Amino acid sequence: MKETRILMGMPITVEIVDNIVTKKEFGKIFSYFEAIDCRFSTYKKESEISLINKCLVKEKDFSCEMKEIFSLAEETKELTFGYFDIVTPLGKYDPSGIVKGWAVYKASRILEEDGYKNFYIDAGGDIQTSGKNSNGKKWKIGIRNPFNTEEIVKTVELSGEGVATSGLYIRGDHIYNPNNKNYSIENFASLTVIGPNVYEADRFATASFAMGVGGIDFIEGLKEFEGYAINNNSIAVFTSNFEKYA
Amino acid sequence: MRVFFIAFTFIAVFSVYPKIVSIYSKLNPPAQTKGFLVVVANDKKAYEARNINNSTYTSTPTATSIKPERRQVQNNVESSDIIKLSNSDEVYNAKMSAGNASMMSKTSDNHTSKQLLRYKDGEYSGTAVNAYYGYVQVRAIIRNGKISDIKFLKFPNNNQNSVYLSNQALPYLKKEVIKAQSDKVDVISGATYTSMAFMQSTKMALADSMLRN
Image 1 (tube, rainbow over the protein chains, first blue to last red):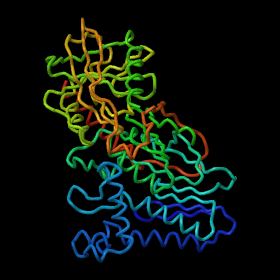
Image 2: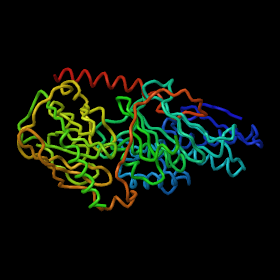
Image 3: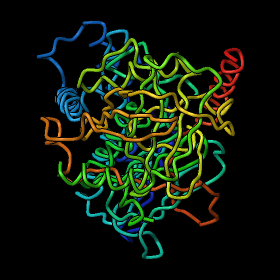
Image 4: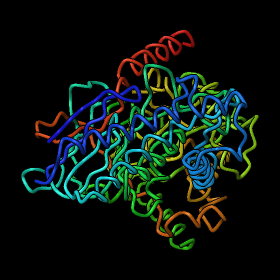
């Protein structure tokens, strides 16, 4: 069973192939994403993050989820030498670079707790896989051609791992270099990272993308992570063990 | 690790030395403002070398040193001619290679592609480049218009950041030309809307490079 809804400004798809699946479970997962959006959306005036940015909520009054995200963001900033930073050039907090992957991962844990083993959750290209697909095989993930969105240029097979792709978006460069906020980065067209789960893949995809073309070296140096980067000449550069997923 | 890196790099550099092909750009700034940089490229066989202008920027070993260097390249696109040393005598333009800590000149292919010129004699130090697992800095010695020696001034060694990295983190990256796949997939990961932003950006970069010429 599979369902897609537009939430958090992007299509979110959940597919569950376990026999025990119920329609209700999808409602539960999508409600979870709605709740996350209400709390973390910088586009919603009344969201907790918006209130924090207006200095209307003190740090001690942050919700548990907000505290968790701030703490994870701080940890990620250290792990990526400052390349991951939820503080924007305007001095506001924008945790969207970490919330998406984190929310997908949390949603996948909800499904696991409810007894589901074979599913995926995809939020705008950030994907958590679990178990096998309806054919009993690993989930087959396509990597989109950044220059022709109709086209897939690589496939990987995952079962339990997470994958996320970073790139430049038409609505504005939401990835910037926190070590020099006024300087734009010469970069890959897209950088796909496979990690132990989608939260890990997403945060390191975002940070390593901000590193420019050195980002793939960063992924190469991380244990349990593989990366596939496409440069502006349609040449893909990928980490030494990436092909174990191909 | 350190010994391995030096040995490995020297063997690789010298094994391709006879096949080095040099390219010079139209504009050739004074020798003392030029640097020369060799960084580990995408696989065990290929190495890349390039000239960079390091006259105004002195790098410091911090995670941010790559940015000023990158800006230098952009501001001095005409002098950032790039050669690639490989086992197949191929001369790539800058944009053909990726996956290392060096930045690519957006406009190098406009004037370097087929022009074979000699290097100016002298010794040139490259900027230290952060490869995330450590810094690489070299000095190239040019005699009779050819690279006669490449010395390493800095190479990866232990630092506090490396605790996060695996200890075998030399980038043996691989590469391929992307091709459309016809496989049926369950789900797609991609940077949505990238293409239009990319094309816009490329157009601007090309326009800029034409103005500079």
